[in-house]
Image 1 (cartoon, rainbow, N blue to C red):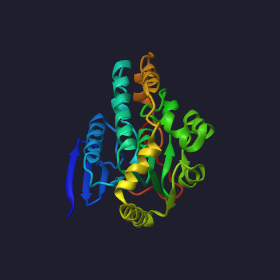
Image 2 (cartoon, one colour):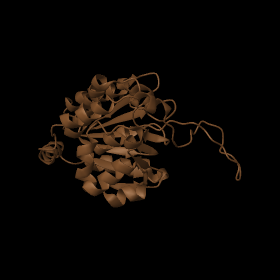
Image 3 (tube, one colour):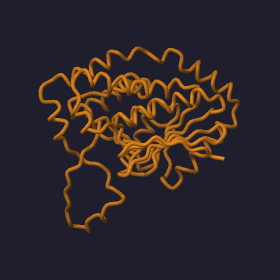
Image 4 (cartoon, rainbow, N blue to C red):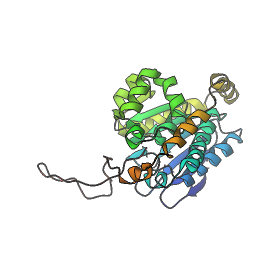
Length: 281
């Protein structure tokens, strides 16, 4: 029997479902962007801490409720209200979330559909495995925004894809598609969207069939030494918010996001439509 626990904010929620050795953490919001507001980060931090204390939980799947986004990152409206001190606190909170996910005594699997930007990408990087739908798009837009990844991504991304690819992602802020992410080693598998749930279930059941103690011990060995001091990243993130004008820059920045599935149909061929949308770090 599934036991459901939910922690929700107005625009972003976190649902936790347990099913024997499996736990599913689902990011859920009305607009399907799953913005990583402070309330959502606190819910994730506390949820991962609770799962780490439950010895029966051997595998954790982290996914989104919709196909528009795994997570489009932090809410720029919230970031625009930060100064250097509160930005440091925000970075520390995000690092606590990713550290608990990375070091938890369970195998974690990120299930990625749609955009995976900024803080959302940092969540995915903290997982042990990443399975993406063909519509997944990965991006670090932070340099364009005048900030930097603050949830540990500057340390984890190079470990996965190497320093050259990490610099390309973070310096240029270009989006990469799922096929490129697979070629770079950012994800473990890419499948059609219609096959994503079935593929993930196969991974989860196969993991759940392994010896739970052996999985915990193996992960402990693999993770040993990866929990480095992220204080320098916190300070660098905070320094961005000490500059004059950064808050106005965050408030005014616009860029492309995937269409809202609840919105009106796209324009007919030959027509044009423009909209001010707010991508997220």
